[in-house]
Image (tube, rainbow, N blue to C red):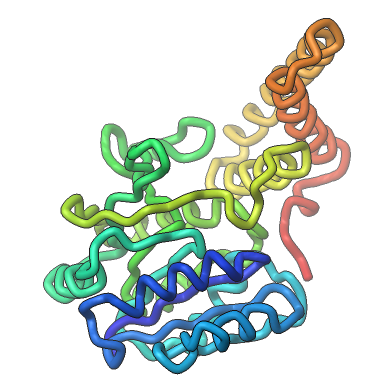
Length: 296
């Protein structure tokens, strides 16, 4: 087996079905890849849809049932335990193939490169490539200036050996920033991050969490702060959290007033955004960083 495609389902059954239908017409023959899906919801909707579309018969699909929603990183790690491929392809449910020879060309490049992570162009609805980033959270580069520092976790090709060497995704992250963390740990070990610009794949984005409300920002900023705690030194982290507390407090007061005067959707969005940040920082200062870690 050459490639193990790993996916996580959390109420994204139709997105997964669409992506698997794309896979079924790839030029890479199905004996070269398998699909392993961790089902993070406790029902059979995904299996029923795949059976109805005959995808379970067309493709090599394994569904791993989790006992509860264990988050993205843990779910990927669970799927990886069943992977038989030499290469692991982390794939979001809301991807669509734009080239029928995408997998074939991706595998060909993986076999000739010594690599840590490979990605391709990740095209959104505005035809923008959103695959690579130059800075980590809070504009940190850790000394790697003017270069790509991490790839979007929507699509990551990693050799199974490297994935196992770094113990996969950090299970302390429930959702968000786990891709940055993985890229950083692989980069620290000296493995290169490679971008294949000749290949493109479409990414809708936000399939499992389409609403950017207070709860969304709370989860995102909680992961941001956890990332900083794990990778910043103590002095840098303490300075950051004090700055965030003051900045978010001012922003909350400002946007609350603005929203009262001009109750628009944009101002509601900004108020929710900064309220979430302020609540997270305040809780961390009043309690400890322990609550930032995802625990089951």
